[in-house]
Length: 141
Ligand code: RB5
Image (spheres, rainbow, N blue to C red):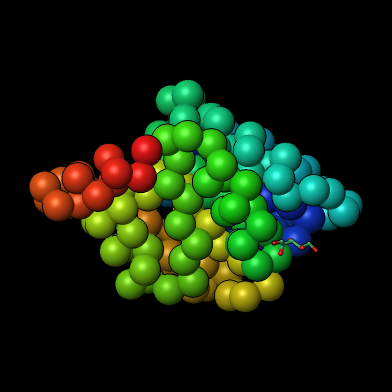
């Protein structure tokens, strides 16, 4: 189960992500927002982060205008490693090295074509489980 969240700036791209996940048969839960009306990104970053931290969802995808504010909010929740990625290399590396459990993107930074490739890369890349990466991640907690 993938937790989804956005503010108004990320709402449109989140709809593209939802369509994409539906086509791939991937289950998701949308924690809001639910329209393009102006709203506050910390609410949705926190909601997705708590869903992942509690184990309600295995991973999350969060989107605001830049991806910055919503990723800062998500990373306040213990156990969450939200990675802001605007390229596939970073999405792959953060899964392999950081075992990132939330992908953050900025809808005003990249277009939907690249965003959906980044989503696929993030969801399909396993953690490396290398000892050095396990050690470094444990140091984050
Ligand atoms: C909203 O205008 C914008 O500030 C927000 O989407 C995000 O970019 C914050 O980091």
